[in-house]
View 1 (cartoon, rainbow, N blue to C red):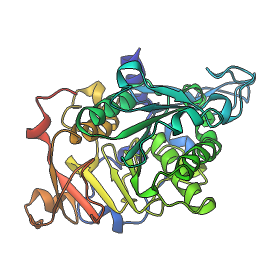
View 2 (cartoon, helix red, strand yellow; view 1 turned 135 degrees about the horizontal axis):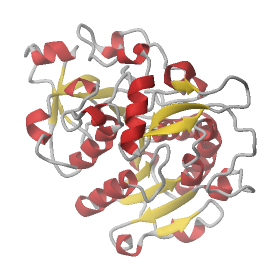
View 3 (cartoon, helix red, strand yellow; view 1 turned 30 degrees about the horizontal axis):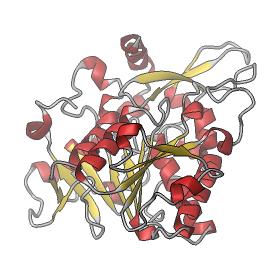
Length: 368
């Protein structure tokens, strides 16, 4: 099925998207006008002669696959994993707290109303990592579990996985998209409660993949604007591009003291523009990434998923990227090798600008 979907996507993807596949050859992405936004028409395959038929588009899920999503509102009431009666975030969003002691027992799941039992367990002196997923994923997905496990293996930190999976699993793509703000408001209330209990906001780091990157950015913006809480860091793992014009808030460098972004499918599934304080472009930040060069992998979301896999690897493996004004100049060796910074989790908060690295020889034989 994934192969069939990938082939369908190959047939229907528009030329306007393909124009974005090449890395920026001459200029720093951050100095460019904003890329032409991918609209519904770019991603959709209209299957109707009238209003009663569904329109479908193809979007990246968290498993490195392309999946069909409905673009128009279904005729009948939408049902999701949440159940027909659950429409408020407090009814379906959950948080699971992990530390080195409880990781083997699957952590402690809580909500805003049941947070008291967790607040007494959270060590306010340790860094707090909050991880969230994207479309068609949940808190038990690879992106959340692997990053969480790598942290607890190598760092003495607290981890909270934000699970909004019952909405994220909706095949009507606008359901999770339009739910981002209300989910973020609820998540911000939980984080506010954690801060009120003694957690220093400068110890808080939000990590979001794909659509979850914009959720993380929206959470931090709500904390900043409405609760006067500015967190230390937000990391965006290939923030999603499709339909982001429908978001009131999205990830950018105003979200936190330090915003770092990893781009691996820029202009295709992910944003190509530099939107953080530090933007990292492995292999130019576009498809295909070195481990995704098969024909079906090119037109799947394999390169999109490389963002979180490279980030997870960075928790245990130290890699430095070079500051440069373009991928072309990096390839020509014109970058200042003294302006290198650690990639991924150890990226320093003082990093500013765009950073590049050719990971072909580093990662080509390692399957993540």
